[in-house]
Length: 67
Image 1 (tube, rainbow, N blue to C red):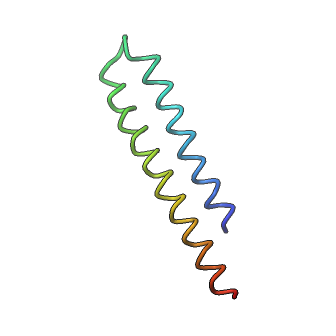
Image 2: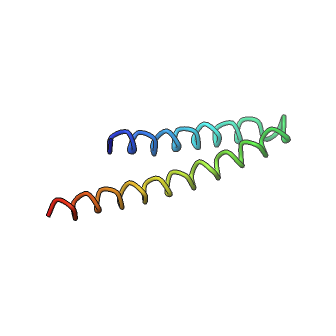
C-alpha cells in the first residue's frame, strides 16, 4: 500500500514537469493554453507535497501501532 502512495507522489511530479515543459515551449506561440498548464503545474506540485506529507503521517502511524 505504501509503495502505491509513493508512486502517486511521483506521478504528480511527472505531470508538473510535463506542464513546465509545455509552458516553456508554448509561451511565445499559444499563451492561452500555457495558463492552463501553469495551473496544472501549480496543482501538481501542491498535490505532491500534500500526498508526501500524508504518506509520512501514514507510515508514522503504522510504526506507532506496531510498537
